[in-house]
Length: 597
Image (cartoon, rainbow, N blue to C red; front, side, top):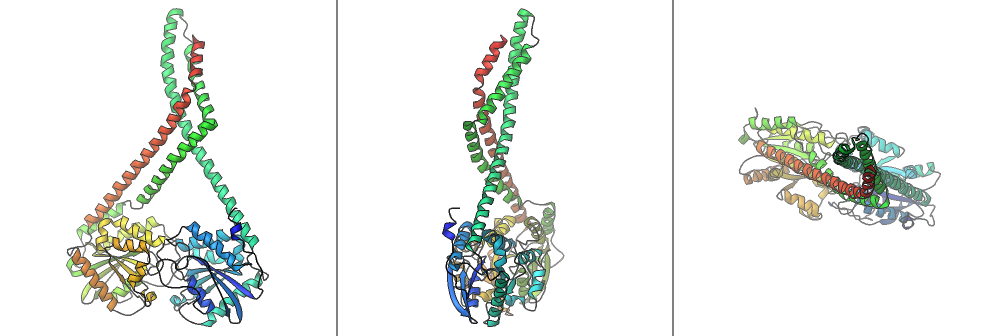
């Protein structure tokens, strides 16, 4: 609770002022929404792969005769900061709304409702507690993308999004930041006034925030306690296992030893009936008692926990990497698909057509890009919170006097399908490009370059191997958002994005899927032709795919080997500890032996 004092936001209230705090994922249009509300450029808002808002900012204005204070906050999922750092900054921002905000506006960009969006809302709700829900409203940006669709129709297509809206008492609004329509501001403020009236003209208070902080601390303590107890249980199970093993070894050793001694005594006294059993029982009992006595003591506990924590950390790290490697396990169907590449296709000869596979995150505009390339509506493309492409689809056409085949793939990070299932489907899509694609068109939506975008590129690389980069080209969609900015300037603003582009041999292109300009398609095909020439006129082959799968298997075997080595290290540490403990029982064993003689 030491950090709570730094986040207090008590102060004198202006009864006529409406205080609004904008929160949400980086790149969704928070700053632009703040500017739209105030009717002026109060906050810096420019298309960039990195967040433009790194610190709290406050601006005031008079809107439709009402005093309004808007607090802009840093965006979640910015690759430049950890989530903990961002959340701490957002907490500090609340102090700018003293004595407390009337509304938290959770900003979501109209488009796919992915895991990042879902996690954004969850983190905000956790940070400000249950009380905050009464003061929260969802603000959708980029309302122009709805076109003839209603916001209610859009929300109804995603159960996850509907659930989020319900937690906000079904309060939401839509903004089009590109138009200067004062009516959308008036409607938003009317909804906020209605919400404030429903809350008895109150606002989110410092007491509510302190309760949320206390709840977070209690939850942390509970989780740490559970983790500690679980670690102790696992460690005790391992100790018990290896103590039993050591005891059995000692038992066998003593059994042989005392049997020999008993035989020697029997030869002298003809009495060797009870001695071996008594000796073995006493020795093993002493060993077990000594071991558990030490293990239960503070020194044994500290040594055990320290060793278990050190080795356990290694095992955990390797296990994560093994899990990561498992995403690219070849399936039986994958081998069949690679065979299809070898056998070829009943369609055009390899030299007759340009074959393109479109891959990327859900909502990036893959299907729309395919339609733009072909110059017709070959793939279903409509604004939706869920992915429209559930299966592989192929469409063909003649573009600039040449035959082109486009294969559309399911999107990554769709909340309705797990990633493993999506990757299986994407692998299956390769067969539709037989005998192999000339180009992997990696689609990225212009905006913030978040961990989801970064992981999208990595997953594609892991699945198709290092050689696939030679046949890949990054396609940025929603080019209209650049306005007067160049794509080179956009890329230069984020080091990680620059590095990713370099992996793809600095090949990229920009599409505006809304424009009917065929020149952008001609330019893209020219870049693809240069790519193909650089590759000696070839295409991505079945051999390359099999190599990628073999490399995946090899990496998995290596990681499993490391995991086994770490497990063996754990055994060695525990056995060494047991052996040390067994030595402390040596005097007891000697005494038992003396009693037998």
